[in-house]
Length: 202
Image 1 (spheres, rainbow, N blue to C red):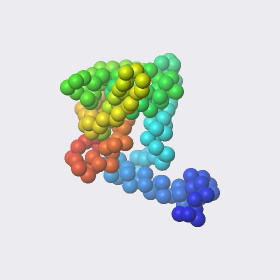
Image 2: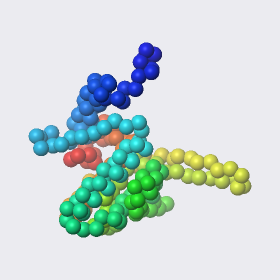
Image 3: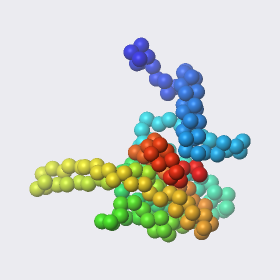
Image 4: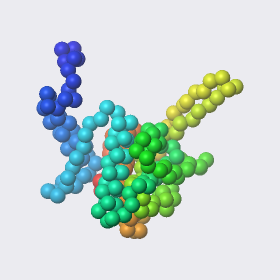
């Protein structure tokens, strides 16, 4: 590792084997998350430097897919929105603002820290680029002490949002809407601790 510390392995032209490693990882994760494996399946993925970059890429991809679909239908494509839990990681809010996407929230209550699937799908309209569902929720709490300082705490509840119920409601209403599963804290736990939970490409 010490000998390679000065190398930029993300340069796939200079280090093509690093691209092969990435593609093998994408393939392994696709299988683990039950991605279709037939010849028509177009499995794609990329490594990122963290969940913030992944969220930015996901938001941009959903927006572009939605815009292209609207353009092809000759419809306006200037007012995209995204549906998400009010407890999303703050980068989702940043991504929406950076890419000019309206934020639509399903707000947490004192008794519920995950999205109600019906409330989430009720917010979907023709301008919705996607729903962000979380596998392993977290909440940010800010506390001020006598106005002198502010501390931010990250409190994990670890709950899973009901992705299957959202998907079923979208299909029932014949709504073509992406679901992005933000599984930064749960994606590599759920397949092992709860393999029957349907939240992935099934």
